[in-house]
Image 1: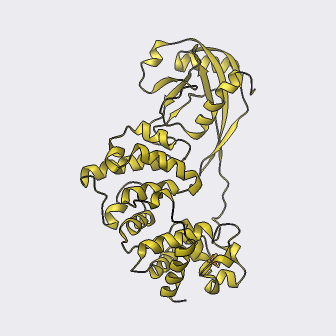
Image 2 (image 1 turned 180 degrees about the vertical axis):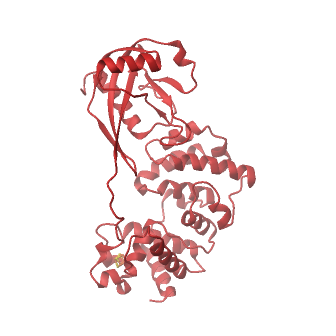
Image 3 (image 1 turned 90 degrees about the vertical axis):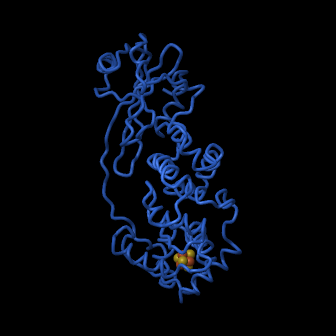
Amino acid sequence: MKPGNFSSSLLRWHDAHGRHDLPWQSNMTAYRIWVSEIMLQQTQVATVIPYYQRFMQQFADIESLAKADIDLVLHLWTGLGYYARARNLHKAANIICHDYAGQFPETLDAVIALPGIGRSTAAAILALSDNQHHAILDGNVKRVLTRFFAIDGWPGKPEVERLLWQHAENLTPIENTAQYTQAIMDLGATVCTRTNAKCHQCPLLQHCRAYANDRVTNYPTSKPKKTIPVKKTIMLLLRNKDNQVLLQQRPPSGIWGGLWSLPEAQCDTTQKALCAWSQNELKLTINDITIAQPLRHTFSHFHLDITPVYASVINESSAIMEQADTVWYNTCKPDARGLAAPVKKLLDTHNDVMTGVIT
Ligand code: SF4
């Protein structure tokens, strides 16, 4: 199949069957596309839509995002995961305001130089918002191309990725780049799906090698498996007399950087050890201790088994509230703070535990 036929088949299909009413498809500015592309990394469209709408309501343009408190940005990201994405958006918005007078840069190299934007994302932003001729190679496109050309090998391997970029560039038309980009993304998201591909609805069916060889499910080749380690931690849900829970802000970089989290006790899960740790490290005397079942949170490179410990604080130390990175958090009327996903989950169940619904 010639590249021109590949793209024209895809464009015709997209006119009739593509997605045309996603929130970021109206008023397609570089800023709006950029935010959507970052949110869509590692996250399904249906999950992203409400987050995207709330984000745009709060930050209608680059300047309002740049000026915002990072805590509010992280708050609007709470639950989406991969928080470095939000921190990079905020950082890049500030760079754009400072170095480009608030105008999104217009060249591929300048966009790639911004934090958190790789080659494919930069290409998608410029192709979709400005019809610039750049090829993209996101997860959907990799799936379509590995199947269409029956390319063996994990797409993360440099030699496989190089070959995929060559195909992507070869197939991307000079005209209608924006529509083609949307079309190949849509095909991967709605027809050439990870499981149960709908090949009979596919405009590429007649020339697809994976389909011809009945090997659709063999592509793309999976990443070689490695077992990931398990780490353990104890998170303290310490409530004061007003039923507020103590939160601490994490350092700006690293896991959950800048997010608000629970104190993590470095001790055994015995009542005696927990009391001693709280006294020594937080200057808080605790009692009424409940140790709950561990909760597993999985990162890309390790599992974290969290043992939640619920306790009452009987002396409220004034020293603790003088620290800027510490707050008593009202779980019934939560304020705008970025919370790590398992911390949010624990806070949501906090009241249930207190009232004996969960033990
Ligand atoms: S025919 Fe099937 S496997 Fe091939 S590109 Fe189309 S949907 Fe994907």
